[in-house]
Length: 154
Picture (cartoon, rainbow, N blue to C red):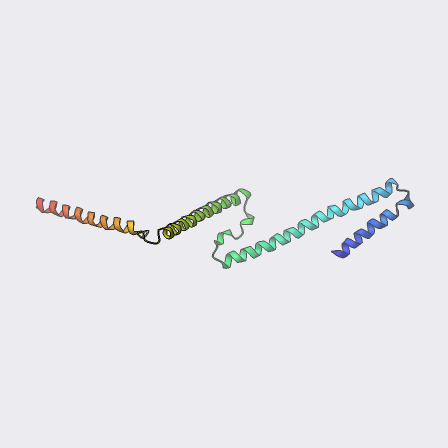
């Protein structure tokens, strides 16, 4: 690339130096304008081609990381979907990320609450355990009532 740039600079310098020879005519100006327009036109396609190859290489690398990692394999090849399909996947990913962030925040809040109480409060699932125990007792009582009803009808 440095050689190409140097060649372009030499062409512009030669063109500028030839100005007095051609009397800075309209034709002289048209030569540089036409040349720069053609070069710009060709460079657009060269740059686009380079970006397409670069994008394809990056996509291949990302696909390989997804394939060998713990990510969902259905993300491989989504660059070929329509814009609305990609937007739907993006929305689902954003919702999942927000859910994950909420879960992390809740866990952090629980840890902070545990630390503030000095670890002396009842365990987090102690209330669940108590309600299960109470529910078991209620079930036994209900079963006992049903047994009493059966005995009474017999």
